[in-house]
Amino acid sequence: MQRRASLHRSIAFYRGFGMNALAPTPVTVAAFYHFASLDALEERRATLMDVCDKRRVRGTVLLAREGVNGTIAGEKRAVLDVLSHLRALNGFTDLAWKESQAEAMPFNRMKVRIKREIVTMGRDDVDPAARVGRYIEPQDWNDLADREDVVLIDTRNDYEVGIGTFEGAIDPNTKSFRDFPEWWKYNAGRFEGKTVAMFCTGGIRCEKATSWLVGQGVEDVVHLKGGILKYLEDVPESESRWSGECFVFDQRVSVSHGLRRGTYDTCHACRRPVSPESFSASEYEHGVSCPACIGEFTEEDRARFRERQRQVDLAAHRGERHLAGE
Image 1 (cartoon, helix red, strand yellow):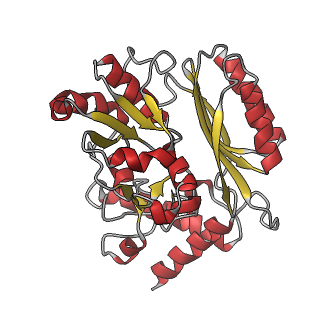
Image 2 (tube, rainbow, N blue to C red; image 1 turned 120 degrees about the vertical axis):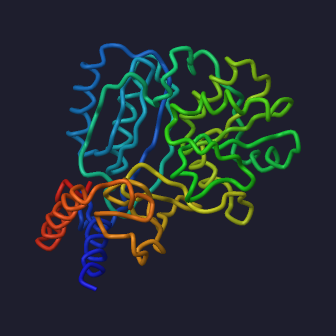
Image 3 (cartoon, helix red, strand yellow; image 1 turned 30 degrees about the vertical axis):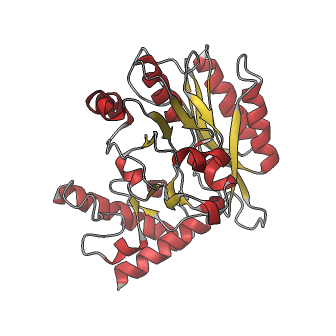
């Protein structure tokens, strides 16, 4: 009972924490990516951090020579200022974003990181700036999915697919996006003569996945423009072929139709999404374990997680936020 009370107290605190807890205006969340050549990465990182800090924008942005990828949140005008800064970069005029609202700030701080890739596939011969599959608008996706010569492939990782996907879609059951080329190598024969329609959260993984397939000689490759998030935003729930919720990489954890906040929380041991039903499972201990990871950690690990959660709960009781809870 005490552990359950601690769980609900922590969740209530973190879900209610915002950049300005008294402000009634929802926080604007913008998710974006763009493939274009980017140089002077250290200089770009420092300048972008400065722009975000001055406007009190938080989130995570990845910079690489192949482009940018990120999700940021803050007051709407401030978020638009940051996006304008990015669009002013050479080759980034067409950078687009998907916008949603959150009741409170979904990020603890601002992070700008330099990476080898903005989404890691680990293949040097993939260049989305040079070639990708055809785009399908969200309003045309259902008609495409109804065709007998079309196969839907979810390019996300297994824990993401586990909480929601399109009806009839194939799950490659990959632990990492790096695994996708190998999965395709052993499964390509199943899809000969088919139109391969791919989808992911916001579209970025599909840019690389379709680029890879085009390079492998697949004749007809398409992907959902704007990803699942754009579909859930644009397609009425009454007409939707989406089942479940969509995992997102911020403290909202998941969203549903209309980009409303979903019902999932995060296991702070393994970072997988946890359903409300899992809270009552014997394998679940808030901040320590969930049914998915109960066999993945040692008793020493769990003791360390319990102490971390104790510090998080103490901070919540004082009305503070402990960074270990991020």
